[in-house]
Length: 545
Image 1 (cartoon, rainbow, N blue to C red):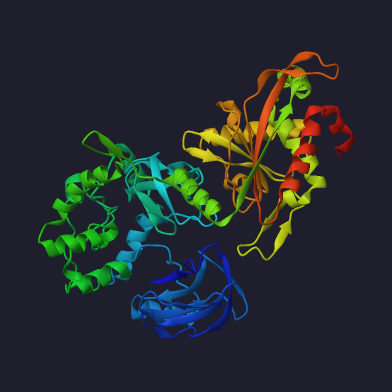
Image 2 (tube, rainbow, N blue to C red):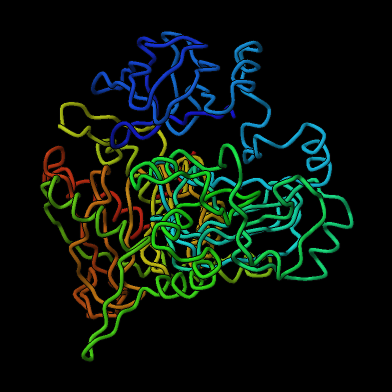
């Protein structure tokens, strides 16, 4: 069966590489761990080895082309001689690349009959964000046996940045869910199995039963290719040991070789009798497949619980957004020399304007808070201090200035701290920014902020004042060079120009800057300009485009 070799991660932050030299040609027979191609990243020359034995059926790139990480690099056929010959003749992968392999002893007539009935395929977890290689299963929206439609939500997963909903790609019946709630799923590996292109009575029968035994693993045809659906009692029984080549992944075959067993003698509990790793382990231990599959749901459910209690203590796994924040903050503090700067703003005038506009646009469904004023005033100040809107490379030998002001705002959510950013603030009005702030805040609090909204930030605002507190020492959102924390607004006594004591709306701001590129004078002057716009909001009018 011909399938694609996916270019793996070849370095932190590397998303593409240049093909330097192919070490094999189409039609070549290759062995596991044999070097296949030399590629050049922006850091080093890397040699990519084969993961299994087989025949190279297609090279997807020519020398000098740019290949993408997590996309197909070449096609390899590790199936029968017939399939290999056909792939070599056509010069391209078999059309069945993404489908599970069928028993090699099945006659062509039987195969045709089975395929006309239905086909079980694995749904591969796609890329769900730049650099994301795994995610946590938060909640399945379907169960085994359910009929699903194209684009129907199937599962909610948590990455290290946000909650993502995975939709179905086609109509069919859910045959197997490969993970339980709380499990960690890997990108580019099977997430669930789906039966597609079935006849109407197959779908109706699946819908009527409403469920399938969890140990079926999607098997709905016997090893002879019959299209009749088995009963519940039949599906819970293990597949009989087959004659000839077993259906199994390279990893499972490798495990069988390590244990010195004949994989063709192992009963398979997977789709169309596919042998799973659990089947091999169970075969060695002397147990039955039925026993293994009966107990596995309980084991999976236990493993899905992240909380362990003992002696009055509670231990939880740090996952998702919280784990990402821990990693990012540690890296920021350990690689960026932070320095802090604090000042107080008199927001009396701008808060009066905000209150006026809030009432004016309330009937139009526009929610105007103070944040749009902070963001817009900061953008106007950034035009005069572009270094505050810059980023440096890892070894601080280059600095990049950005024309777009993509201003991030930290949002405290039920899944952790998220920092979506308002794009191109320099081109937006207060109303435009207010609408974006509302949209991003709601999405973040629902845990469904889009990945694009999380990327590309150039400077950040953390609003601790909504909770309480006046002064903070925020940690820079690397690779940005500055972040500011807004304290709570307090009504405090101050002297006016005539020496009279008056009540004013006072807020403290706390800056953290990257001392490699920003000095105290720069951040103080920038903060002063930002302050002038906020304390006299009418001054912003003459600077807006």
